[in-house]
Length: 447
Image (cartoon, rainbow, N blue to C red; front, side):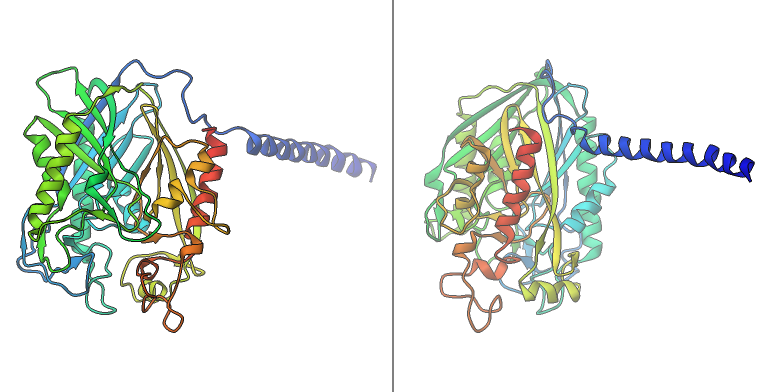
């Protein structure tokens, strides 16, 4: 028996010791700091690539596509200009790899479809962000604008769109070249309007300008502006990228490619004074391009930093729950919640907050009311940031909770007077959940 007890001790003690060591290592690893948001030193130059691919449905003449953005069951009748997938590969040469930005000329996608696009991308990079111009003159990619309770989203078309987005990403990586990145801003508030009080929005047009060392190559603009591309209005039945199309057309005349990024556009539209909506599109796009071309730019340090926080939002909108259950759109609603993400992206010293929907600008800049979460500006303790709206997901409108008013008899089904936006929102908790995620990112990244 003594020999057995000695044998047990000889086996048990090392096992206990190993267990304690493994627990200690686990605690230490869980307490280990995450990789720093910023590198120790910026890179000494930028490497950037651009690619694009058409995403206009090739079978629009034979398949009954519906328009996405306004009323339901509005058939596509023609094409004014193409929908595009545009991709930009950004590498700061700090040894961390590049970041890929993709912008799609469409109303938006949910995260399940964004993940499917990421899965198709065969490009070495540390982050992929998919954004949407949110044109209201393109085919329904969410599924909400088909016949009542029947999806307007076509899987075959989504597969084509995803393949083309991946092709644009591959082209951007293949086209990467060294050069200088510049940043500039100017006022553009005469082009915007706010349809709902309080009247607050970003009044600036911002742009990054990449100038390749090889002067035979096109330059590139990443253009940021905050206004719905809904200028073609609800009676339009023709596919168009809306005013970003004319923005790109004018920049192309000056030997430049472009990628468009929307901002905090909750209730923010374009001033459209003329009865000819196509002319309004053209005037807005051309004026934005002319402002971009005449900007004063300064050099942006070779540094692109990225961090993402995943979180859930409770889905209070019963119509969203029913639509998800009936596969009207491809949403992963589980336990009456949906998982999404918010990111911090810093490009050449310019801090950008990526939000998964149409953010009401007062959530970014204020003023808010007692009972609302802190603003983005308060969380970051700064005002010199940009909001990238409809980034990595289109969840609908994100409103301050104290401004969230529903119809008492038919909530989410019928709008309360002057409160249309709530009917296209997951619910009143979205803003607070986003801000909580941003607070986590702010602490993690030290910005």
